[in-house]
Image (tube, rainbow, N blue to C red; front, side):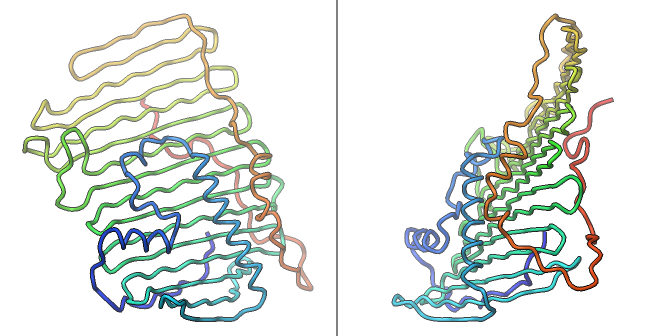
Length: 374
């Protein structure tokens, strides 16, 4: 991702603690999309790229396009609002690698007493050969220790025979006591029909906080799905959680599960996975592995085993269903990217031979996810 040069925030001028309700209000005023107060437990339950997340990213990128359109010439400005809030704005251009030019705007602000500060960035990047990019980033912090950072990025590349649209977002927040939440997601679309999506979510309670019984102190979830445009489809998920002290006291315990499925257009494929737990104070290590082999002729082999002695290996007559195509593809990605497609390319300089310095590759086979067992 090509980003403008970092512009450092001014230091906090006051370490005075704010009441929790006042801090929350200021955070919302400074960055309406901040999710620091959202339930991290709820956040990791969703295993799909939600329409709300896509809408939020689109809104941020639309705001980026608007902010940049209002800044045709480089310059800077500053001022003070009636409530004492100070703000600074800087704009400019920056030459990047491979002939790209970045036009950027940075808006910084600080509350009257210095207890809250934030920074917003927007940028637009293009070259002369078919690369377009929009990006936006929000960050901030308070004197009590709360902080957040959110970044959205979208690129359209037509420099090769197969065109690509990529989108990604990275959102992190920490509240004053120290609880954290982090989410990253990526989407890649190719004009030949290939689609790939991945997401990674993480959360943790504040240091020194003991979670309720049955709940984790930290948790991670990763998932992905890919369609290669030739009938091959793959989905996978991997999630785990743990706590430093088991309920009632004792050693730490962890638990998790993962699964993968791969299918060809002829309905031949496989599914496999494992559920596991590691609880030294309550049963030790446990694992239950399972798998399905789909032969494409209506016969499915199901097998598995567990550390407590269970095992099975059977055949059954049943249909093999899988999602052979993404429900959101290349044409959808184009329709959802009007601001990106309207980014103007750089004029070509005299002597250009029309050959771009680099191109993006097609999403590859079996990228990411747990390996298939031998």
